[in-house]
Image (cartoon, rainbow, N blue to C red; front, side, top):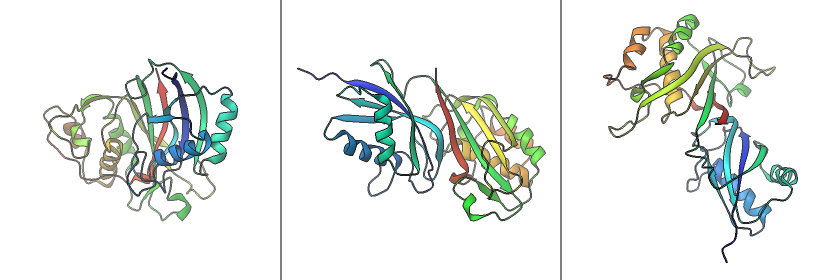
Amino acid sequence: MIDKRYYYLIKIQFLGYRFHGWQKQPKLKTIHLMIDRTFNFILDGVAFKTLGSGRTDAMVSANETAFELFIYEKIEDEAAFLALFNHNLPQDLRALAIKEVDATFNIIQHSKIKEYIYLFTYGQKCHPFCAPLMTTILDDLDLELMIQGARLFEGTHNFKPYCFRATDKGLYTRTIDSCELIENSLFTANFFPEKTYTLIVRGKGFGRNQIRLMMGTLIKLGRGDVDLAYIENSLKPESIEVMDYVAPASGLILNSVEFE
């Protein structure tokens, strides 16, 4: 007799500063490793498997992301299970919610909207406590020009120049639903500088390092290294440009994942 398998969608958040991203890697501390290690302890021999909604790079944080839990024993009290899970997770990782789904749900293929934010400030040295969440650009930046540049990424474009180590076999025509650069009010702390900013990007799919390469190009725009026409031309189907500035990982936060 084959045991029945149950399926759960679990929302989580984490500070990524001490982790080497989501995916398990030999001899490295990752988010997936800590989640499975915690389940091995609290499930006490019950067979399970976990699958993330996507990968994050080393030092990237998540305000909200998700993974799927496949388990061969029904969770009778989801609230108590979530509390037990949180009690045993490290302090920089927290489970937010749990919901039972059915076998037709596929966390990788199921349509979803992701919202990324990139926190930054410029022109001054910041309190060291900012480092896990925010990038500091010591140069002066033209914010108004960067705001215009961010809007150029909206819509359907060729994002091959903004994908790290792109090959000729990938699918690089992607759609960004919205991309705006605004003064930050999403995250605050008494050790943040007076003025901080955030790039907010929403879309269904992003390539490797895409947001960080977009942000890096906006920083170059703000410094005067490139102009708006450079970004416009880089997004054209015939563009063979390769972006060379990957913005630091610690400013990037996966802000939300919405399943349709």
